[in-house]
Image (cartoon, rainbow over all chains, first blue to last red; front, side, top):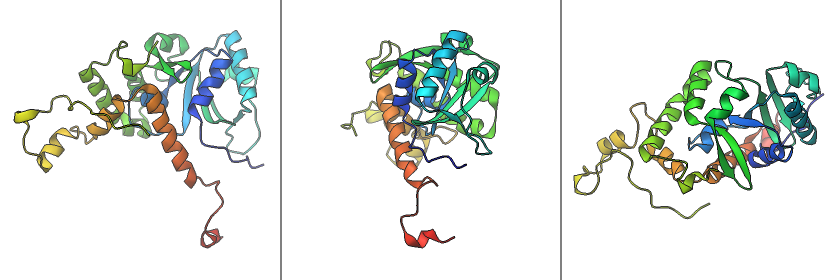
Length: 178
Length: 81
C-alpha cells in the first residue's frame, strides 16, 4: 500500500493541535534550535512527551485527530495506539499536518521530567510553546554524535555564542516568552 | 516578508573610525566564525521574534516541497521511465 502524499509540515498548526488537546511536551531538535534563532531547515517537528498515563491518553486523542500513522519502511498502515505509546521510545509519524516525531527520551536518556525544567515557553501565534533551551539542544546533539548531529553543531554553537553576546534575556521583547 | 530592520553591528566588530577597510580580509574575519559559519545569517535571525523565525522555517519547507518526489512531473520530458 502506498501512502498518499502529504503537505509540507505545518509547524504552528501541529503545535496548536497538541495545545488544543492539552498535551504536555517539550519541542526539541531542529525546530527548538530554529525558534531560538538558529538559521536551520528541517522537515519535521520533534517532541518529547510526558509519559504519564493521562498525558498519553490526551496525546493519543491528538494523534487520532491528526490522522497519524507510523512511517513504516514496509509501507504498512500502522496507527499509534495506547500500547505503542506506552512501550516505544521513538515514534516517527506522518500526519495530515506533516511529519511529527515523538520521543520519550533524547540524549543521555533525558525524559520529559529532565527536559521541562530546561525549557522556556515562547509565544508562537496564539499559543505558548515549551521549547528546549539551545544549550540543552546542543548537549543532546553532542551526545547523539551521529554525522547529521555533528554537521549542524558549529551553527548551533555559534548561535549560542551570539545570543549570549547579545544578552538575550526573557525580558527581551524579541523573545516573546511568557 | 517583513520590513528590513537596522541591525546593530556584530559583537566584537570594530565600528566607526576604528573599522578596518571593507575588503575580503575584513569579511572573512568578521562575517564568519573560525569554523566558517555565516554569523550575519545568525545575527539576522536573532533579531527576529520566535514567531517570525518559525515563519521563515515554514517558508523554506513550503518552498522545498515543490521539489518533493511525490510531485508529478510538470514537464513531459521528465516523465521518462
